[in-house]
Length: 173
Ligand code: AMP
Image 1 (cartoon, rainbow, N blue to C red):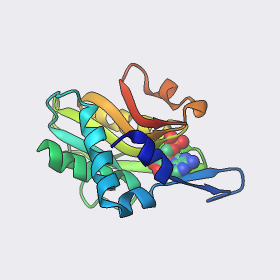
Image 2 (cartoon, rainbow, N blue to C red):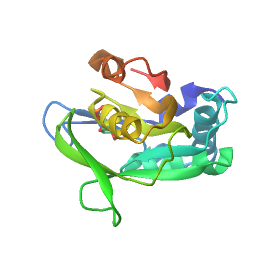
Image 3 (cartoon, rainbow, N blue to C red):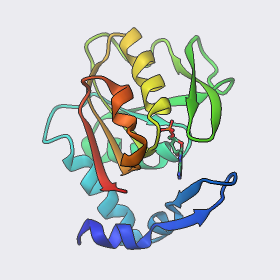
């Protein structure tokens, strides 16, 4: 199966959640067993076989992909969550995304210094969300192996916010 089938399944929703945004709706991919499995396989391949201790998923659609990738890689799963959702001691950082502002948090003991992590999200837009996750992981001393997303909106140049960290996208628009 090729990434073209994934691309064909992703639905553009114009003016959601606000005017001017073309929202990439990945629910048709999730709803199709073959497409969902293929999306996880392609995300796993982005590691190139590197050892991954933890897969870090970003709230909320990132969780869906990251948890499945973690299971496939035999790695742990770590959530980066929107403010106020994590129960233990957290680090937090504020960031802006394509349509608004937010604060994300990470448990202080979620990753040990030197652990190898793969960051997974559904979509890279301006890069603010992924950069916030990277900042928190850097503070904990994680070794960020790669940031892998299903979709990259390349025209928003989100990679520029991620420094030297390698980024992989299965589909680029
Ligand atoms: P950003 O911080 O601008 O890179 O935004 C990335 C986050 O916002 C991801 O977690 C996406 O789920 C969500 N997002 C931003 N823009 C879109 C879009 N056009 N379609 C779907 N999700 C989006």
